[in-house]
Length: 465
Image (cartoon, rainbow, N blue to C red; front, side):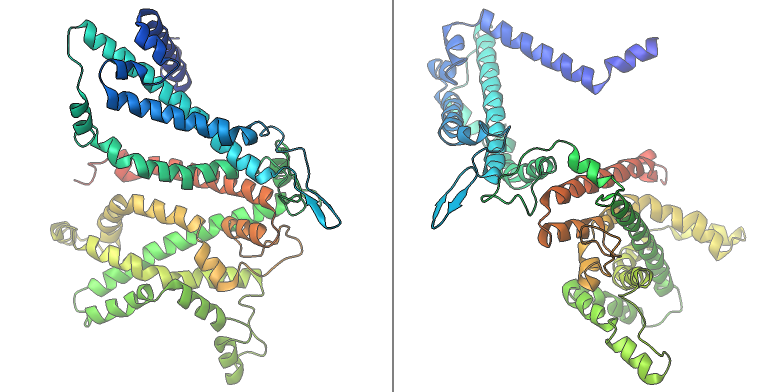
């Protein structure tokens, strides 16, 4: 019973509501014990600090209030008021006259932006209330409030982090957070080729798109989704671990005593990194084409009777992509492994040799544990990156070959991210593309969180000291 109570006390939901309750009590106390300046600040932000001589702080709060209210009332409200329906008046084109109606796309975009502005207004209001409470407590204790000069200098001293990060945080919100929120909302609409703004309206459909994704009927996406998801996981596994272990093997081979021209071999391997992937992958894709150099040479020599189906057979295409990715990934891992192998104390290997350990036993007990300990987070990053590795798949064969049994334009080698791209660009099926985008995030987040907790460098940070 005691354990369950302690878990309830430490639950995030409980902490949130306790913090919310404490915040509300503080606001009530500020109103009840505050003077006229404080009470007036509940309506006119910053008026309290201005009347107390802190014009800079008060003017900042007041300016933010004016800007946010002006945006909400003067521009955003016309869209926010239609957010629940995403518009009701369709564009009417009769003859040469076009009467424009509601634009669902703009209603959703600017409606969300207005909602964020409302949240920002509440946040600024709370900061304003807290500022008034802090000033009143200082005055009650007989202390002097900071003057405007001190407040200005604090922007470049004690509050320099706020000054420095203000614009970057705003940029991250506008160009990263808001598009993500917009994409999530699109997943709950019927925004597709038949509902294109501004000529056609789209509206909310709830969880219908998610039900379609896991539906195995004739028009369902379930079978295609599971096929693409399985290949995405298989691809990420082989693309990560084959390059990882082969890269270590190549680094150990080049670093081995007695190997000549070490710099030459490293230079040759690094050339694959120096050449842009956009160029090399397109070139390699043409090499393996039915009429490409490889099939042409094999046919000319009489080694095969017909072109090998590198890109026309799904299994051949998947194996070819994995092999080509090895050629791309080994050099990068070789460089990382070369530096790490030089940091392993030679005394460990000498002691192992004296005890009669074989090279395989030394690799398994010394080299591999050290490499996994140091490169564990990097390995996880590579795996999650390969889950969304658009370049290799799309530049080699555009996710082909296509299959009549797969919906949404998916091909035999499509990853979730390339399938999403095709549905967005080719089919303009934005609603299902948004759903798949959410699923990509869920798969990546779950794998990252689970594996991260299993990494040796996370479980025991000093385990290899």
